[in-house]
Each structure stands twice: as structure tokens, then as C-alpha cells.
Length: 460
Image (cartoon, rainbow, N blue to C red; front, side):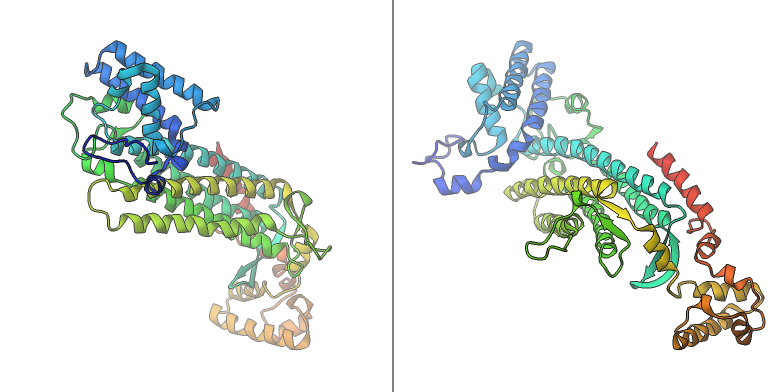
């Protein structure tokens, strides 16, 4: 049997049941119910404030909406597909509670500006929650960095050993990425925090509404200046998904490094039991599930961004039913980003341990101090390019002899160039190599301690 129509008398029959199911969004937009109730209460107050409805009617509407909120929280209000969407579900239940007065709630309002308002209220809250999670993630990065200022780790370019680093410097690189994420979300919040309420279906309304009054009640920073733009704009959602995608990029890069570091080939970290799993047939295995899942989930957030861009690129003004498809993308991206931030925070806080002795051994067993030999000669007055070419020969000779640079005798050094003295050994010792890179923003220990102070200031 077809469901009764929620539309005007223009329609002679109800939707086909399969089409009603296909058309309905109640299965996912029920997540907006608290925001729909907040927005509707503000709209009711505005209607009474402007005299469009009586003050007593406004109070009835606000009280009835509050009753729906309590029913929903207690599990007593569970609308089905027959309601089509959360907005109709609320209005229908309100009319059951307060009678015909409930039918006045939709005066001077369309579902188009209503859903836009609800979505912005929702996303505004979620941005604040995600920013708090970013701060928690940064706090753990900072704590780890403070513990490992003088712990050395090989630095890589092209995944080849390049130069040794302070482990704190490496971790603070992710702090800086996350700081941009936190700031970016704050900037986007300002554009999310604009009210479309009162734009109507697309052209505004003939009623003497006060859009600034509802915006103030809902703590919006302003109102859309153009009603067409107000109901059809999804730039704010795309911007959020861009920011979410960048958060996932940064988490995924760190996740990939943890995966490498946890391998036998690197052995830089040990995974703890609380954040790893085993194999169903290989008892020796300890798998990095958390970073692997973060790396994998990154793709779904990228997909939501791409999906919404494609959704929007061909839509004429103003509202189109296509825009119903923005909700699930937003909802899933929010949940995914929050979950990944939480998981990576826990992983860093209690799920892994850096193997300091292994890291120290690693920076002593390569040629990542070769640049420092060239710098040493340049400091003695040898042109850098000449020094660079000479050191290339030194490395080639050392490899042929199965030696590292630290293993060469002083006579061998002097044979290569008379400028070499016994202080070459101190110059190429890994801790000195790191310490000497004291340019602003570098990995030198003094610079890292300065960066730690800046990071603390950013968090405070």
C-alpha cells in the first residue's frame, strides 16, 4: 500500500513504496535532529518576536519541540521511512503534540533553508570537536618530543638515508602539520558559521521576518546576503572535506612511518599489545593494525571530497535534490577523522615505544654524515663543490674497503686532502652532526628546544 503523501493537494496519489524508500533520507539525517530542534525553536521565537504568530503560539511551539527532544533522547521518538526526512518527522510529531499550532512552524521557512541551517549547526559543533582532538594529538606529539630531544633517528629523502635528526625534530614536523590543520579548521568555521535561515525556498519570503534575530539566537556570525546562494551553497562543506582530507594526509604519513619503523628491517619502535594484533596462523607476528587502518581510511575521506565536488559542479541554482547526498559524506568524514585522530593519539601515547639503542646504532652505521665532511672542508676554505666531489670519492673508497667514514685513519684522511685534522672525527660524530645544524628551524638541539617552547605556547 502506498504511503499518504506529505505534499499538497496538487498530488493525486502517494509515492510508490520503492520510490518512497529511495527518496527518504530519514535513515541518516536523523543525526541532525538536535540541530533541527534548535533551529526550529529559534525560528518559532522569531515568528513570535516579529508578530507573525502570537506570543503564546510561539511558546507552544518551543515547548512542543522541547518535548520532542526529550522523547528522542529517551528513545521514544523513532520516525520511520514514512516521515521521509527528519524535518517532516519533527513537524508531524509537533502537530500531534500541540495541534494545529504546529502547522504554523513552517511559516516563512522552506526545507531548503532549514536543512542548510541544520547542516551548518551540525558541522559547526563537529569542527570544534575535531579541533579539540587535533589539540590532544599535538599534546602527545609534544610530550614525546620533549622526551627525545637528544635521541637521534636517521633522516631520509627518497627513502634513502640522508642526514641524522633529533627524533624530537621529526615529531615536531607533525606538530606543525597539525597546527596548520587546527588553524585551517578555525578559518573554515567562520564560513560555516553563516545563517541561511530565512532564505526560503530560494527567493526569500513575503513575511516580515528578522533573519538577524534568528542568527543571533543561534550564535551565527552573520547571514547569507543572497537567498539563492544561501540555500544552494555547499562551499563550506567542501572546504571542511578539504581540511579533513589534509588531516588524514598528515595522519597517514605518520602512520606509514610507524609501519616502517615497526618492521624488522627498521626496528625503530616496538608495538605494544594494546594497539596491535597477531596473525591467525603465524604466532610470531605483531601487526600494526592502527596505522594501517588510518592509512586505509584516508581514501574514504578523499572519496567524500571528490564525491561532493562532482555533485556540485553541474548543479544550476538553486536547491536540487542532489544536495541530499552531501549528508552521508559529511557524517562519515566527521566520524572517520575523529576516530583516526583518537586512534593515532592513543597509539603514540601508549601503543608504541621507541627503541633508543637501535636508533643510536642506526645513525652510526651509514654515510649520512658525508655532507658534514664537505661542510668541514668548506669551513677550512675549500670551495664547497670541490669538497662535495672529494667526499663522493671518499664514500666510494670507503664502500670498496667495507669501511664507514669514522673508520678511516687520519693518514687516510690527509691523503685525501691536507686540510683534514684530527678534529674530523668529532665533526662527523652523529650527535655533533645534529647539534651543528643550528640554523633557524633546523634539527640542532638548541633549535629543537626553541621549537618546543613555541609548540607549548601554541597549545596554551
